[in-house]
Image 1 (cartoon, rainbow, N blue to C red):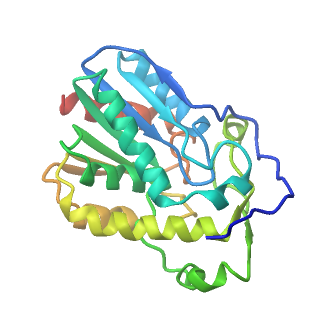
Image 2: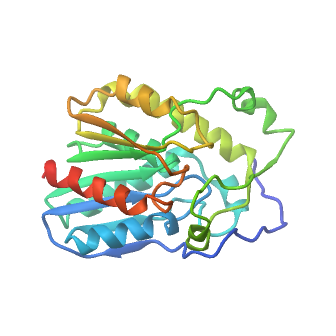
Length: 261
């Protein structure tokens, strides 16, 4: 891991609120919402607000190294992200009887990994656009490549609802060191899938250009959960929590939680 980050700072892209949130609700249902890699709780805030309106207690976590400057990602990795999620589940359990874990993109990987490793298991897991594997040769080369190519600049968003961009907040460029950490997390989540026994809801946008479209089917095929369902959203890109069908995504998540409470 590099010992020092570059000194050039990079402003975030778009204008959402990157701060973590806690919406106190009833004791029956607690929900942990986990944002994606390079993103922030801004992409989960709308979903959190909706779930809180239904009565749930909702926490939107800010993962270590996120929500500030991309240089901070040089000092954190997948074990830090996983530990933060485990601690957040423990905190919610002190407030609520049943805890659900839901995440978008890398947050979906963390939801799967957390669901498979915390004890007792959560009441349910929701994985949205989770990159459970990568076919890109550059990702496989990252253990060496990261020492020669320090930064990766993100391309345009595949989000279908352009108005949603104003609600998002993420880093426009990322250390390749951090991409390697996400790839390591993906491998850990993949290995953990057979140990996942909690009810599982997989949600995926059909216009998702960020991950391989087969990821949702892979998760469904390899998860150990007996109760599992995959739902596709025909008009959404990667960030389904804020895209055109966001309200349908939120409602489907809530019905899943009600069914397993």
